[in-house]
Amino acid sequence: EIISTNVIKIYNLRTTLKVLCLEMKELIKFGPMRDEKLKGLSAKQVIETLPELKLNEDEEDCNFDLDPSFRRMGIPIQNENIIKTINELIEKIENYLKVERVALRYKGLTKLSELDG
Image (tube, rainbow, N blue to C red; front, side, top):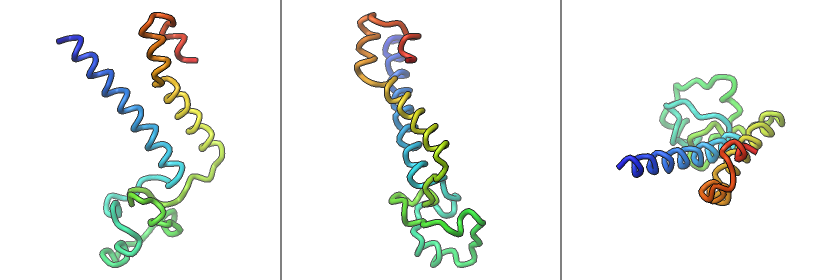
């Protein structure tokens, strides 16, 4: 039972890290999350259903329809340092989660500290 619980925890943590990587990629492409009132609405729906809505400065130039899920602002990240940092983090996490690394650890060919690369 303890082994099953630990295997499930590891699987869930790995899945969480994979989702986090996907969300960071989305952040680069489509910018930060929208306000709760705007999530799921196309630009046309925003205008039709919330005519009294006042957009703040960073939302005025948004292309809400750029994000296919309508969850993000539609403003891609422009700062190269931020993009580089996020991409490096994504790469490090994805490399850590690769099956090859897990196989090496399973076989006892490497120590956890060596996986940090």
